[in-house]
Each structure stands twice: as structure tokens, then as C-alpha cells.
Amino acid sequence: MSQRDLAARAGMTNGAISLIEQNKSSPSVSSLKALLDAIPMTMSEFFSEVEGSEPSKYFYSQSDFVELSPQDMGMGETAARVSLRQLGNAVDHSLQVLHEHYPPGADTGPDMLSHQGEEAGIVVSGIIKITVDDQERVLNPGEGYLFDSRLPHRFQNIGDVPCVIISACTPPSF
Image 1 (tube, helix red, strand yellow):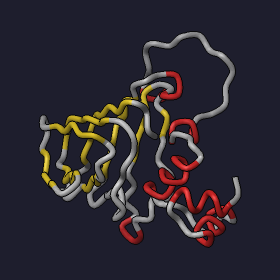
Image 2 (cartoon, helix red, strand yellow):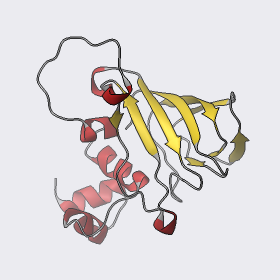
Image 3 (tube, helix red, strand yellow):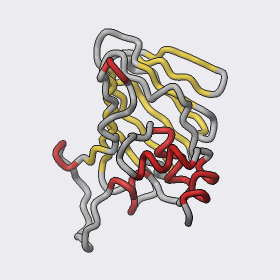
Image 4 (cartoon, one colour):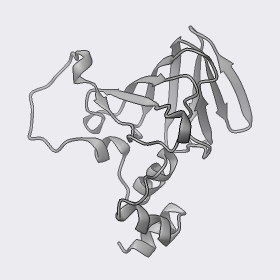
């Protein structure tokens, strides 16, 4: 696929693709997701290490989780960084489970996310403002969400403490 084709499929400009290719720009999470959808490839596949066949694994320690977030999510001066840690290898499963961590001020970005599937989560600690389509709500510990991921959505920690969410998505999207 040519750079032009990729740009058209991802809804981006050739210039933006070129800057990313030359490592002169880092894509936002939503831009990276659009690029991968155009290929098509999931975030999980993109960030996974190529490994040989391994025996089945059913239990995971914290060190086994895989960090899926790009280093720089375009949050500017706040340097807030969303952490999405995946349980297991989503490439081999139809369910993706994430341990999400949003420092104060962290945001998935001004561009709303949208992808195939459904996602659900429960806030473990902190608060999070979630926008889904034209609805917005601040969730507290013990509260949760469930929505069609094709609807545009965004997560923002508007609190003074980190927010932790345990979420699931099917099929895996990152």
C-alpha cells in the first residue's frame, strides 16, 4: 500500500504520514488507531513482540502485563501519561482486559476514539470524565460504563488523584 493510500484510508494527510515515518512527529492515540485500522492491524498486534509458540498461560503477575500506550500521547506541558496495561496476549484471545491508569489531568486526547467492538469498565479509584457520543458523565469508584466502541468516546481524569480502571473490550482493539 502506498503512503497516499494509507493517508486516504486513515483520513490523514500525506504530510502527517511522512512526518511520522521520518520520526519527526508522534501520532496521537486516535491517529495511531486510525492508521492501524487502515492496514488493518490492532494496537495489540502492533505493540506485541514476535514470539514463538509458548505453552498456555492462565495466570499473570504484574510484570507480565504489556504496556500498550505510546510514550508521547501529545499531552504537551502536563506530561500526563495514560497507561494501558494489557493482561495476556490479546492477539490470541477474543477478549482484551486492561488495567488503565490516568494521572491527574491525563486525557486520551482531543480527538475522540472510535473502533469496532464493545468496551466496559469499572472505576477502582479516582474519578474519570467519560464522553460517549453526545453524553458525558463523571464516574466515581465502584461505578462503570458499557458502550458500543464505534461511538466516539474520550476519557479525562479531572480529579486531583490518579484514576484506575479495570476494563474489557471485545474484540481486542489495541
